[in-house]
Length: 124
Image (cartoon, rainbow, N blue to C red; front, side):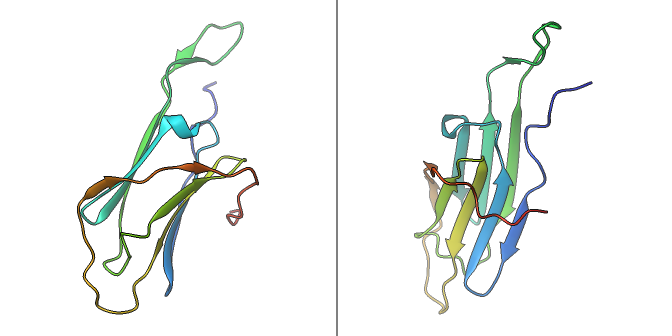
């Protein structure tokens, strides 16, 4: 049988005040993750080097994923944040602007910070 999946399905929430993505990346460290915003999209990449899957079988695999989400037009792209909880839950958050202010839409990297406490993401 194959090894454990690198991630599970993401949970995306968009309410009146904020846009949030919860993504289970427990098999990845912050160094393996890249989160960036380009135009109106957030892209989340994760990539491992090869690792052993079984101590006796000697099999290995390359774990990687790429997710892309459209940001709502009223998300404040100057106030985006991304955290990685101790139990491997990546949380990307963008507060929403309540007025018609213009936001800058260039490309920039969003740092991933590590939290020492488990995620508060809802379990599915």
